[in-house]
Length: 93
Image (cartoon, rainbow, N blue to C red; front, side, top):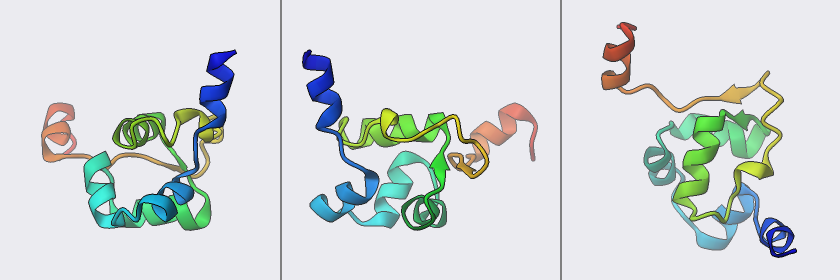
């Protein structure tokens, strides 16, 4: 029963920004994406990748849950931006 109550207390990403007034550029950098990608999530309803959704959940300390998005809809998925380190490991230069 407690698990259901925890799930109901989550908020959307838009609600998080409205409540906490976090700067979007700062937030995007902290979760490993770009301001533009974050804007597409907020304004156009794009769905983040699972990795990005987890980063958002961790940064918001669970206030914005991974379960708040339908991650099965991958058509307009936003992924975290690649770092040079990741690109070099994968050979994607």
